[in-house]
Amino acid sequence: MAIFHFRHNKNNRSSGANVINKVAYRLRTKATYRDFDTEEMVTRYHSPNPHEEVIDLGVYGAPEHLSDPLKWAKAIEDSEKRKKSVVCREFEVSLPRELSKEEMKKAVDELIEKTITKHGMTAHATIHYSENNPHVHILFSEKIFNKKQKKFGNKSRIYTAPGSDALKYARETWATIANKYLKDYNVKISHLSHEERGIIEIEPTKRVGHHTSARNPTNEVIQHNKIQSEKRDELLKTDRKFNAKYLGFLNMDIILNGIDKFTSKFKTTTKPPKNT
Image (cartoon, rainbow, N blue to C red; front, side, top):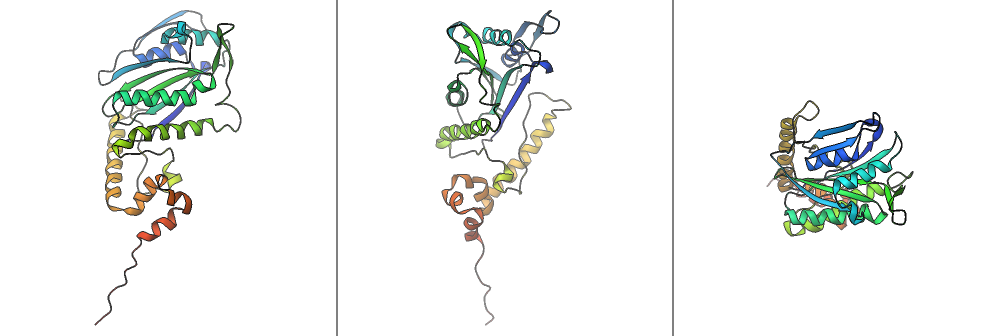
């Protein structure tokens, strides 16, 4: 069953982030760039993962001469002059396994248009496709390309303004887009957390990385997700109250009247038989 995972990452130069290297890593290719601190040329090789297919969706919102992902990344990197710069941001999004590759591409296109390029920003997207863990990396710069000056200039503050709900909107937007494509598969996802839906019967699934390490114990995570998914599937079949909580965000009666009133109809009202 499809899961909801939408993570926002902020990439700071002071933490060693480099846009060229990040794009190259996601494309599983070589990165060559000038280190900001030492000004020395650096080359890094990012080997392909034999268990996944890399699908480069290209650059969004940039002029044609920056349509190459690494050229786009270099232009972004060169436009950031400060040591403390946020050189780029990223949306890391799980893609529903039920969808075809073409449907995944279309869904990602819609997400980028509604959350990034509509605000004047540019982005690069890469799908890492595997049967168990298809996901997309969307790197984007807050820098807006100035067509008159033919370079990146001011930044959009849509995701950094105090009190901004843009990130919440982006998460909800992805759920809406994904559910549109999942309609034919009789599957839906929610951007709401288990806590927000009152779900205590199961634990949330965890992100699965592409390699095992102390920080990313892939085998343990896979086992955890398997157990929780099996519990969820069984409860969806047998427990109508859990079903209402898990899928309640889709039910207008619950939205209007609340979960308790909706699930009260499932409580046993049959009286025990009288002695005869």
